[in-house]
Amino acid sequence: MPKRAQKHDSTKHAILDVAERMAREGGYHDVSFRRIADDVGIKSASVFHHFANKEQLGAAMARRYSDRFMETIGDPRDPGTTGEEKLARYIKAFSHALKVDRQMCLCGMLGAEIDSLPKDVANEARRFFNLNIDWLETALTRTGGKTGKKTDIHGKALLVMSALDGALIISRATGDTSHFDQVAEQVSRLV
Amino acid sequence: MPKRAQKHDSTKHAILDVAERMAREGGYHDVSFRRIADDVGIKSASVFHHFANKEQLGAAMARRYSDRFMETIGDPRDPGTTGEEKLARYIKAFSHALKVDRQMCLCGMLGAEIDSLPKDVANEARRFFNLNIDWLETALTRTGGKTGKKTDIHGKALLVMSALDGALIISRATGDTSHFDQVAEQVSRLV
DNA sequence: TGCAACCTACCTATCGTTAGGTAGTTGAAT
DNA sequence: ATTCAACTACCTAACGATAGGTAGGTTGCA
Image (cartoon, rainbow over all chains, first blue to last red; front, top):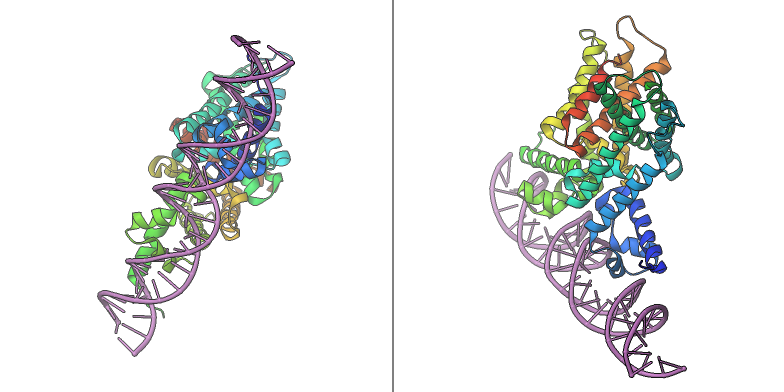
């Protein structure tokens, strides 16, 4: 099988890192090849060696973010953890964005911009939300005694995700991280 | 008293209308003087006759949006309506953005971009969120029998706003307005 | 006459993108 | 072991388009 060039991959990752940071701060439209190149330490034309165009770069960036996010929150069917623990882990992922990364959730940002995104980027953003809804529905379904109706579970999944994504925006806008904590506390009691 | 020039005001309003639409679709960075001018039917240089620069235009746009939003949701102290009715009216304002305007909440968008906004624009976005939190706290406090602790009210206000702002993003991203409705239904039961 | 509300014409900076080139590496044939 | 073609990972230089912004002129109304 192909022995991948190491240099290629490390530069590619560096490009995605910088692009993601830019998109999580200022949105897709604020991502620029020249500023990416400056940060990585190459020329802007060289970015095209790794990504065909901005749309493909954006799509790869969103896909990588989704994959990483799903890996962070783990298996929603894991019998070793309770529904409460799974939800706590989900909340922690958003909390990490706010308090460690000090940035928006990438796909929250892309979701807000959805109407103005190139097709492939928009599709990746949509995929993120659908994956999250599925994950939450699965995690919230097998919660000990409380099983609840299917529609209830679906609604709760939507509420959890909405509240956390919104709380991220509000906390960052007001500059008060305790706003997120107060929302998270109420969300965690929904199980 | 100053007899305002009508032409000035109508053009100014037209500029703000177009700028707001652009910002609610693609964010602040996607707002452009040339595209505004094209839509309004003037030249881009003429926009500077009405607004000193992009930052001032952005700030005016956000301020106008906030003022209009606060007027829409009405007086949170109005003794003629119940807490439930006030909350329903608040939810309706977000629902209107989703289903009639088919756009993001302007300040939700600006909130997501907060780190990359010019100072004056960021301040207007912050102001919107603080006004909203205050409004919700007031509206939720005087709700018939249930008064609740002050910290509970504050937390509920944050949850309502977070959930609705997040639901707006998720509904638009997934293209399913029923997602918003399901969140709204749960939020309305928080009173 | 004076000012508001535009205009033309232009500036510099940056955008995504392309063409074409170069240094270094690799793998296979000579 | 040497040569050579192919390939990777970059580069320089530039394209046309667009960005925010400015100087100074024109027009029409009070």
